[in-house]
Length: 466
Image 1 (cartoon, rainbow, N blue to C red):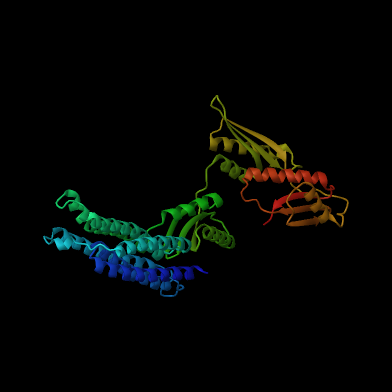
Image 2: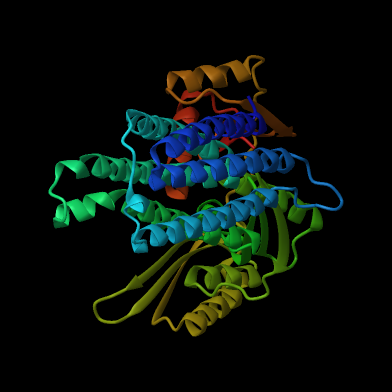
């Protein structure tokens, strides 16, 4: 059963029970003369009206977006919740005025409540129905994110307590005849039914405040702090390279509409930008179920000024490759930077000496380091040459080596050749929960183990599947 069907079944169930309870309470209230039960009957009658409105709202909210309503029809549920709030306010006002009239009346008959087991029975039945109905509505509202059903659930949860107050009232009226006339206890018990109706009115007013505030907030597109926090956390954890500049989240029924602005490199190609936007939209959709996201990309003209970034940027300017960065603060207050520089293996130190010294001075000047130590290494990332051809069962040998080492089975084994140069790329399933350091250690160890197991016929590179 889809979400719309679940909401419809829950709403119609609420209508049926509200109608049955309203009729039963009205009959018992007229027989007993209990203001508490009559107020509960009126309350249930308004519940019936509100439940009918919820059925209509759920039906309208299920309609797809159109040209006149590009954000869908979900707001109708908030409108219905606001209408229900106004009905409850009218109920509370009537109960308070009637209670005041009875308390101030000089006619003893105004406080008279006819004892009946039917009164107890209908209130207990009402409590049992409301307990089950509130649980059902809460469950469906949580599953479908329905504002109308959530309002009904909160409403009927309060009905449980108001029914308990009425039960106390008619119990007090029933035992009043057992007390001494004119005593304070007799005075209180004779008015217990009226006091119970005032408790019902106060509970109704409390529900009005909660429902009204929530409905108005949703109609005015008040930002959902929880939803915003979840999106920010997801972006920070899974896409930290594209920081958020602005984020707005609005709700319409069971859907979220997300507008966000992210910072990207200013020279990003439009095709790449489109792919990044698609990835961000998928991330938000997995974070907020039922969301539509619009991503605006703004060029990040300001670059991060961390020491690592500054060193890599300066190295790129001087046409160096770098790795093995070390930033060390000593007890003597010195700031030491050590960097491995990658140079062509056949180059002479003399030909690169000026560039190396210029790079050292720029790093020292930009980062105000006391010592900049440079270690020169040959760039040996070229694919080596092999004289013997690859065996016909090369891929099978790779798979058997992976099994022997207890490694994940490869998703792909690809060999690329150019003359006598050979590169074998082995793809394994992704492990997204690993940190960069853990992933590097794992792949490096696997590379080493496979090189020991396989014939020395190609350079092996283990990587994660695309």
